[in-house]
Structure formats: C-alpha cells, structure tokens
Image (cartoon, rainbow, N blue to C red; front, top):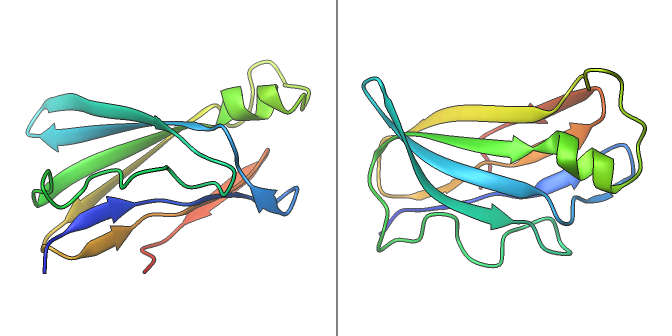
Length: 117
C-alpha cells in the first residue's frame, strides 16, 4: 500500500464545509521547514487533489497550516483585533505508508483535529 495525505475542513459554527480556505503544506526536518505546496478547499471543504499523493509521499514530520482568519474574513465574520484564530499550524508525523487524513473542525473561537480515516 502506498501512503498519501488528505484533509477535510468543516465550519462547525455554520454546519457547512469550509469552502475557499487556503492550506499550506510544509515538511519539517531538524530545524528546517520546507514549503511543499499551497492548496485551497473546494465546495466540499476538501482539496481537489490529495495534499500529498502516493508518488510524493515520504514518512516524516509535516505541518499543515490552515489560514482560518482569511477564511473567516471572507465570510464577513467581524474580527477582533487581533483575531483569536488566524493561522492554525498542525504538526504531525507520518510513520508508515498508509492513508493519513487530518481533518480540521473550525469555529471562530475554537478548533479540533484528529487522525481520520
């Protein structure tokens, strides 16, 4: 089996997928952080392609950076100064070549994540 990485962003305050959220993927090694790609969520709150498809998959430490503040701004949700949640970094490890699914459940004042399937 080949490994790959996906996500799904749900706006729990509105009960809808988070359409149009920008997500950056980084690979972490030692003290360096290398930007691999930028994606945007579609109408279903997912990216159109796998974030890290099997032909690019390597085990290691990664970081997904969810641009929640810009997403909330696009909805017209009034920001505080500064906004409580702006950029949400999720750092995680992938230790074997399987499907890793890292969802984000978001509201203006909280979020949660887990290793999905």
